[in-house]
Length: 382
Image (tube, rainbow, N blue to C red; front, side):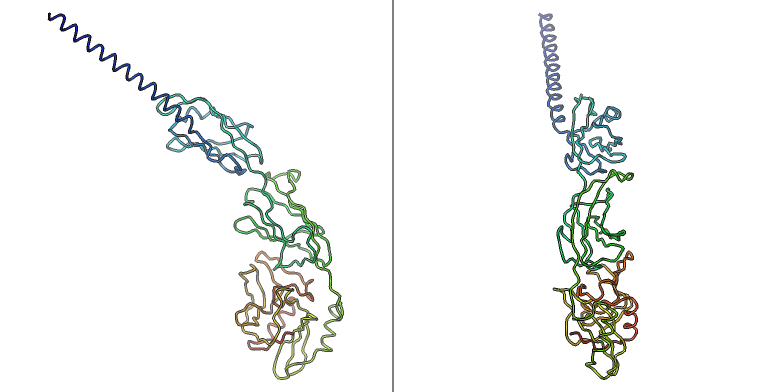
Protein backbone atom coordinates (compact mmCIF):
# COMPACT_ATOMS: atom_id res chain seq x y z
CA UNK A 1 0.00 0.00 0.00
CA UNK A 2 2.87 2.33 0.81
CA UNK A 3 4.50 1.62 -2.54
CA UNK A 4 1.35 2.57 -4.42
CA UNK A 5 1.14 5.88 -2.53
CA UNK A 6 4.79 6.75 -3.33
CA UNK A 7 4.30 5.85 -6.97
CA UNK A 8 1.21 8.01 -7.20
CA UNK A 9 2.99 10.98 -5.63
CA UNK A 10 5.92 10.59 -8.03
CA UNK A 11 3.52 10.39 -10.97
CA UNK A 12 1.74 13.55 -9.90
CA UNK A 13 5.01 15.44 -9.43
CA UNK A 14 6.30 14.30 -12.79
CA UNK A 15 3.06 15.22 -14.48
CA UNK A 16 3.01 18.68 -12.87
CA UNK A 17 6.65 19.24 -13.82
CA UNK A 18 5.97 18.33 -17.44
CA UNK A 19 2.86 20.46 -17.46
CA UNK A 20 4.75 23.49 -16.10
CA UNK A 21 7.61 22.93 -18.54
CA UNK A 22 5.21 22.68 -21.46
CA UNK A 23 3.38 25.81 -20.33
CA UNK A 24 6.60 27.77 -20.04
CA UNK A 25 7.68 26.57 -23.47
CA UNK A 26 4.38 27.66 -24.99
CA UNK A 27 4.56 31.01 -23.22
CA UNK A 28 8.13 31.53 -24.43
CA UNK A 29 7.27 30.46 -27.97
CA UNK A 30 4.18 32.57 -28.39
CA UNK A 31 5.76 35.45 -26.50
CA UNK A 32 8.74 35.37 -28.84
CA UNK A 33 6.42 35.21 -31.85
CA UNK A 34 4.40 38.20 -30.63
CA UNK A 35 7.48 40.14 -29.49
CA UNK A 36 9.33 39.54 -32.75
CA UNK A 37 6.33 40.46 -34.87
CA UNK A 38 5.62 43.65 -32.95
CA UNK A 39 9.26 44.64 -33.22
CA UNK A 40 9.46 43.93 -36.94
CA UNK A 41 6.38 46.08 -37.64
CA UNK A 42 7.83 49.07 -35.80
CA UNK A 43 11.21 49.61 -37.43
CA UNK A 44 10.70 52.90 -39.24
CA UNK A 45 12.62 55.67 -40.96
CA UNK A 46 11.52 58.90 -39.29
CA UNK A 47 11.60 60.89 -42.54
CA UNK A 48 11.15 59.11 -45.85
CA UNK A 49 10.69 62.00 -48.32
CA UNK A 50 12.49 65.25 -49.13
CA UNK A 51 15.48 64.51 -46.92
CA UNK A 52 18.01 67.36 -47.08
CA UNK A 53 21.30 66.77 -48.88
CA UNK A 54 23.22 66.97 -45.60
CA UNK A 55 20.43 65.87 -43.28
CA UNK A 56 20.88 62.82 -41.04
CA UNK A 57 18.46 59.92 -41.53
CA UNK A 58 16.98 58.50 -38.32
CA UNK A 59 15.81 54.89 -37.86
CA UNK A 60 13.67 54.20 -34.80
CA UNK A 61 13.40 50.68 -33.29
CA UNK A 62 10.50 49.63 -31.11
CA UNK A 63 12.86 47.77 -28.71
CA UNK A 64 16.56 48.03 -27.84
CA UNK A 65 18.80 46.24 -30.30
CA UNK A 66 22.22 44.63 -30.14
CA UNK A 67 24.01 47.31 -32.13
CA UNK A 68 27.16 45.23 -32.64
CA UNK A 69 25.18 43.19 -35.19
CA UNK A 70 24.62 46.31 -37.28
CA UNK A 71 28.02 47.97 -36.95
CA UNK A 72 29.45 46.44 -40.11
CA UNK A 73 26.49 44.94 -41.90
CA UNK A 74 24.37 47.94 -42.90
CA UNK A 75 24.51 48.85 -46.58
CA UNK A 76 23.37 52.03 -48.32
CA UNK A 77 22.18 51.58 -51.91
CA UNK A 78 23.40 53.37 -54.00
CA UNK A 79 26.63 53.45 -52.03
CA UNK A 80 27.48 56.56 -50.02
CA UNK A 81 30.09 57.19 -47.35
CA UNK A 82 28.19 57.55 -44.08
CA UNK A 83 28.64 57.41 -40.31
CA UNK A 84 26.42 55.38 -37.96
CA UNK A 85 25.52 56.37 -34.42
CA UNK A 86 23.28 54.53 -31.93
CA UNK A 87 21.80 56.37 -28.98
CA UNK A 88 22.41 55.13 -25.44
CA UNK A 89 19.02 53.41 -25.32
CA UNK A 90 19.95 51.48 -28.50
CA UNK A 91 16.58 52.28 -30.02
CA UNK A 92 17.62 54.99 -32.47
CA UNK A 93 20.16 54.75 -35.27
CA UNK A 94 21.34 57.95 -36.94
CA UNK A 95 22.91 57.75 -40.40
CA UNK A 96 24.80 60.87 -41.49
CA UNK A 97 26.35 61.38 -44.95
CA UNK A 98 30.04 62.27 -44.80
CA UNK A 99 29.59 64.65 -47.72
CA UNK A 100 25.98 64.80 -48.93
CA UNK A 101 23.11 62.76 -50.32
CA UNK A 102 22.58 63.12 -54.05
CA UNK A 103 19.57 65.37 -54.84
CA UNK A 104 16.39 63.60 -56.05
CA UNK A 105 17.95 60.13 -55.50
CA UNK A 106 15.99 57.36 -53.73
CA UNK A 107 18.15 55.35 -51.31
CA UNK A 108 17.66 51.92 -49.72
CA UNK A 109 18.99 51.07 -46.25
CA UNK A 110 19.68 47.33 -46.07
CA UNK A 111 19.63 46.16 -42.45
CA UNK A 112 21.25 42.74 -41.84
CA UNK A 113 19.87 40.03 -39.58
CA UNK A 114 20.39 40.97 -35.94
CA UNK A 115 19.24 40.51 -32.38
CA UNK A 116 17.48 42.47 -29.69
CA UNK A 117 19.20 43.02 -26.35
CA UNK A 118 17.08 40.05 -25.15
CA UNK A 119 18.88 38.01 -27.85
CA UNK A 120 15.73 37.36 -29.88
CA UNK A 121 16.35 37.12 -33.59
CA UNK A 122 15.67 40.09 -35.90
CA UNK A 123 15.11 39.37 -39.56
CA UNK A 124 16.92 41.41 -42.17
CA UNK A 125 14.90 44.10 -43.91
CA UNK A 126 15.13 47.04 -46.28
CA UNK A 127 14.02 50.63 -45.63
CA UNK A 128 13.82 53.45 -48.17
CA UNK A 129 14.02 57.24 -48.25
CA UNK A 130 14.27 59.87 -50.99
CA UNK A 131 16.32 63.08 -51.10
CA UNK A 132 14.90 66.50 -51.91
CA UNK A 133 15.83 68.15 -55.17
CA UNK A 134 17.58 71.50 -55.54
CA UNK A 135 15.89 74.53 -53.94
CA UNK A 136 13.07 75.93 -56.04
CA UNK A 137 12.30 79.56 -56.78
CA UNK A 138 9.27 80.83 -54.87
CA UNK A 139 9.10 84.26 -56.47
CA UNK A 140 11.27 86.79 -58.30
CA UNK A 141 10.97 90.56 -58.58
CA UNK A 142 10.88 91.85 -61.27
CA UNK A 143 8.64 89.10 -62.61
CA UNK A 144 9.51 87.51 -65.91
CA UNK A 145 8.43 89.81 -68.74
CA UNK A 146 8.11 92.94 -66.58
CA UNK A 147 8.60 96.34 -68.22
CA UNK A 148 9.22 99.87 -66.91
CA UNK A 149 11.22 98.40 -64.03
CA UNK A 150 13.06 100.73 -61.67
CA UNK A 151 15.91 99.10 -59.74
CA UNK A 152 17.76 100.68 -56.83
CA UNK A 153 18.78 100.23 -53.22
CA UNK A 154 15.14 100.49 -52.13
CA UNK A 155 13.92 98.33 -55.04
CA UNK A 156 16.52 95.60 -55.67
CA UNK A 157 16.04 92.35 -57.52
CA UNK A 158 14.35 90.04 -54.98
CA UNK A 159 14.66 86.26 -55.21
CA UNK A 160 12.70 84.12 -52.75
CA UNK A 161 13.35 80.38 -52.41
CA UNK A 162 10.91 77.74 -51.18
CA UNK A 163 13.36 76.70 -48.44
CA UNK A 164 16.77 77.52 -47.00
CA UNK A 165 19.70 77.43 -49.43
CA UNK A 166 22.23 76.93 -46.62
CA UNK A 167 23.71 73.70 -48.00
CA UNK A 168 23.71 74.78 -51.64
CA UNK A 169 25.76 76.97 -53.93
CA UNK A 170 23.66 79.58 -55.76
CA UNK A 171 24.86 81.56 -58.76
CA UNK A 172 23.15 84.58 -60.33
CA UNK A 173 23.92 85.78 -63.85
CA UNK A 174 22.54 89.15 -65.00
CA UNK A 175 23.11 90.28 -68.59
CA UNK A 176 24.14 92.87 -69.44
CA UNK A 177 26.10 93.34 -66.25
CA UNK A 178 29.49 93.30 -64.64
CA UNK A 179 29.09 91.46 -61.36
CA UNK A 180 26.49 91.65 -58.62
CA UNK A 181 26.14 92.79 -55.03
CA UNK A 182 23.73 90.78 -52.93
CA UNK A 183 22.39 90.33 -49.42
CA UNK A 184 21.04 87.06 -47.97
CA UNK A 185 18.49 87.18 -45.16
CA UNK A 186 19.17 85.33 -41.84
CA UNK A 187 16.76 82.52 -42.79
CA UNK A 188 18.77 82.06 -46.02
CA UNK A 189 15.63 82.03 -48.13
CA UNK A 190 15.79 85.47 -49.78
CA UNK A 191 18.39 87.33 -51.82
CA UNK A 192 18.48 91.05 -52.58
CA UNK A 193 20.55 91.68 -55.69
CA UNK A 194 21.83 94.71 -57.58
CA UNK A 195 24.40 95.00 -60.38
CA UNK A 196 27.77 96.53 -59.52
CA UNK A 197 27.62 98.67 -62.66
CA UNK A 198 25.05 101.42 -63.21
CA UNK A 199 21.55 100.27 -64.05
CA UNK A 200 20.76 101.49 -67.54
CA UNK A 201 17.37 102.88 -68.49
CA UNK A 202 15.36 101.27 -71.30
CA UNK A 203 17.51 98.10 -71.32
CA UNK A 204 16.30 94.50 -71.50
CA UNK A 205 18.02 92.37 -68.86
CA UNK A 206 18.09 88.58 -68.55
CA UNK A 207 18.40 86.96 -65.13
CA UNK A 208 19.48 83.33 -64.80
CA UNK A 209 19.82 81.47 -61.51
CA UNK A 210 21.78 78.26 -60.97
CA UNK A 211 22.17 75.88 -58.01
CA UNK A 212 24.44 72.97 -57.08
CA UNK A 213 25.61 70.96 -54.07
CA UNK A 214 29.26 70.31 -54.84
CA UNK A 215 31.86 72.99 -54.27
CA UNK A 216 33.97 72.29 -57.36
CA UNK A 217 33.13 72.59 -61.02
CA UNK A 218 30.80 75.02 -62.75
CA UNK A 219 29.57 72.12 -64.86
CA UNK A 220 27.71 70.83 -61.79
CA UNK A 221 25.42 73.88 -61.71
CA UNK A 222 21.83 73.31 -62.77
CA UNK A 223 19.72 76.19 -64.05
CA UNK A 224 16.62 76.75 -61.93
CA UNK A 225 15.37 80.12 -63.29
CA UNK A 226 15.47 82.10 -66.53
CA UNK A 227 13.66 85.43 -66.76
CA UNK A 228 13.65 88.72 -68.65
CA UNK A 229 12.71 92.26 -67.61
CA UNK A 230 13.12 95.75 -69.09
CA UNK A 231 14.04 98.89 -67.18
CA UNK A 232 12.10 102.15 -67.39
CA UNK A 233 12.55 104.08 -70.62
CA UNK A 234 13.59 107.74 -70.27
CA UNK A 235 10.53 110.00 -70.37
CA UNK A 236 10.66 112.93 -72.81
CA UNK A 237 10.69 116.24 -70.93
CA UNK A 238 10.46 119.88 -71.88
CA UNK A 239 13.48 120.71 -69.84
CA UNK A 240 16.95 119.88 -71.07
CA UNK A 241 17.77 116.18 -70.95
CA UNK A 242 21.36 116.99 -70.21
CA UNK A 243 21.43 117.30 -66.44
CA UNK A 244 24.08 120.01 -66.39
CA UNK A 245 22.03 122.13 -68.80
CA UNK A 246 18.88 121.48 -66.80
CA UNK A 247 20.59 122.71 -63.63
CA UNK A 248 21.68 125.81 -65.52
CA UNK A 249 18.04 126.32 -66.57
CA UNK A 250 16.93 126.01 -62.96
CA UNK A 251 19.45 128.59 -61.84
CA UNK A 252 18.20 130.94 -64.51
CA UNK A 253 14.43 130.53 -64.16
CA UNK A 254 13.71 129.49 -60.55
CA UNK A 255 12.40 132.42 -58.50
CA UNK A 256 12.53 132.69 -54.74
CA UNK A 257 9.26 132.07 -52.91
CA UNK A 258 10.69 133.22 -49.58
CA UNK A 259 12.88 136.31 -49.48
CA UNK A 260 13.97 136.22 -45.87
CA UNK A 261 16.44 133.72 -44.44
CA UNK A 262 17.27 130.31 -45.84
CA UNK A 263 14.92 127.95 -47.63
CA UNK A 264 15.06 124.90 -49.89
CA UNK A 265 13.08 124.91 -53.16
CA UNK A 266 12.16 121.58 -54.81
CA UNK A 267 10.63 121.36 -58.31
CA UNK A 268 9.35 117.79 -58.76
CA UNK A 269 8.65 118.32 -62.46
CA UNK A 270 12.28 119.13 -63.21
CA UNK A 271 13.77 117.04 -60.35
CA UNK A 272 15.81 120.06 -59.29
CA UNK A 273 16.51 121.33 -55.76
CA UNK A 274 17.67 124.90 -55.34
CA UNK A 275 18.87 126.65 -52.19
CA UNK A 276 18.02 130.28 -51.43
CA UNK A 277 19.17 132.74 -48.79
CA UNK A 278 17.58 136.16 -48.41
CA UNK A 279 15.96 135.75 -51.83
CA UNK A 280 19.24 134.94 -53.59
CA UNK A 281 19.71 131.62 -55.35
CA UNK A 282 22.87 129.96 -54.03
CA UNK A 283 23.00 126.67 -55.93
CA UNK A 284 20.94 124.00 -57.76
CA UNK A 285 21.21 120.21 -57.58
CA UNK A 286 19.71 117.23 -59.34
CA UNK A 287 17.51 115.00 -57.15
CA UNK A 288 15.46 111.84 -57.33
CA UNK A 289 12.07 112.14 -55.65
CA UNK A 290 9.29 109.62 -54.98
CA UNK A 291 8.05 107.38 -57.78
CA UNK A 292 4.42 107.02 -58.81
CA UNK A 293 2.37 105.67 -55.92
CA UNK A 294 5.03 106.74 -53.41
CA UNK A 295 5.24 110.44 -54.28
CA UNK A 296 7.17 112.99 -52.26
CA UNK A 297 4.56 115.09 -50.41
CA UNK A 298 4.09 118.55 -51.90
CA UNK A 299 3.61 121.62 -49.72
CA UNK A 300 5.58 123.72 -47.28
CA UNK A 301 7.69 121.67 -44.88
CA UNK A 302 10.77 122.26 -42.78
CA UNK A 303 13.88 120.48 -41.52
CA UNK A 304 12.78 118.74 -38.30
CA UNK A 305 15.97 116.87 -37.46
CA UNK A 306 19.37 115.98 -38.90
CA UNK A 307 21.81 113.11 -38.52
CA UNK A 308 24.98 112.31 -40.47
CA UNK A 309 24.04 108.67 -41.09
CA UNK A 310 20.49 107.49 -40.54
CA UNK A 311 19.45 103.82 -40.79
CA UNK A 312 16.13 102.70 -42.28
CA UNK A 313 14.77 99.57 -40.60
CA UNK A 314 12.02 99.38 -43.23
CA UNK A 315 14.48 98.98 -46.11
CA UNK A 316 17.62 97.79 -44.31
CA UNK A 317 19.90 100.55 -45.61
CA UNK A 318 21.76 103.68 -44.55
CA UNK A 319 20.85 107.23 -45.60
CA UNK A 320 23.85 109.55 -45.17
CA UNK A 321 23.32 113.26 -44.50
CA UNK A 322 19.72 112.70 -43.42
CA UNK A 323 17.31 115.62 -42.88
CA UNK A 324 13.66 114.87 -42.02
CA UNK A 325 11.03 117.14 -43.63
CA UNK A 326 8.01 115.76 -41.70
CA UNK A 327 7.68 115.32 -37.92
CA UNK A 328 7.49 111.52 -37.99
CA UNK A 329 10.58 111.21 -40.17
CA UNK A 330 8.85 109.23 -42.94
CA UNK A 331 10.13 111.61 -45.63
CA UNK A 332 13.37 113.49 -45.84
CA UNK A 333 16.38 114.63 -47.82
CA UNK A 334 19.44 112.39 -47.92
CA UNK A 335 22.42 111.21 -49.91
CA UNK A 336 22.15 108.24 -52.26
CA UNK A 337 21.39 105.25 -49.97
CA UNK A 338 23.72 102.36 -49.31
CA UNK A 339 23.44 98.80 -47.96
CA UNK A 340 25.22 97.68 -44.79
CA UNK A 341 27.43 95.48 -46.98
CA UNK A 342 28.76 98.52 -48.81
CA UNK A 343 26.65 98.68 -51.99
CA UNK A 344 26.10 102.34 -52.93
CA UNK A 345 23.13 103.51 -54.99
CA UNK A 346 24.37 104.85 -58.30
CA UNK A 347 23.86 108.44 -59.45
CA UNK A 348 22.25 107.41 -62.74
CA UNK A 349 18.74 107.70 -61.28
CA UNK A 350 19.23 111.32 -60.25
CA UNK A 351 16.82 113.35 -62.34
CA UNK A 352 14.22 110.53 -62.32
CA UNK A 353 11.53 110.03 -59.64
CA UNK A 354 12.31 106.50 -58.43
CA UNK A 355 12.63 106.78 -54.62
CA UNK A 356 10.10 105.67 -52.01
CA UNK A 357 9.18 109.27 -51.19
CA UNK A 358 12.42 110.84 -49.98
CA UNK A 359 14.55 113.24 -52.00
CA UNK A 360 17.95 111.81 -52.88
CA UNK A 361 20.97 113.94 -53.62
CA UNK A 362 24.35 113.02 -55.05
CA UNK A 363 27.32 112.48 -52.73
CA UNK A 364 28.80 115.97 -52.95
CA UNK A 365 25.54 117.98 -53.10
CA UNK A 366 24.05 116.06 -50.15
CA UNK A 367 26.94 117.12 -47.95
CA UNK A 368 26.69 120.74 -49.13
CA UNK A 369 22.97 121.00 -48.39
CA UNK A 370 23.33 119.12 -45.08
CA UNK A 371 26.07 121.46 -43.81
CA UNK A 372 24.21 124.57 -45.01
CA UNK A 373 20.64 123.84 -43.86
CA UNK A 374 19.63 124.22 -40.23
CA UNK A 375 16.84 122.63 -38.23
CA UNK A 376 13.80 124.76 -38.94
CA UNK A 377 14.85 125.67 -42.51
CA UNK A 378 11.69 125.76 -44.72
CA UNK A 379 11.41 123.25 -47.56
CA UNK A 380 8.89 124.06 -50.31
CA UNK A 381 7.98 121.14 -52.57
CA UNK A 382 5.80 121.63 -55.65
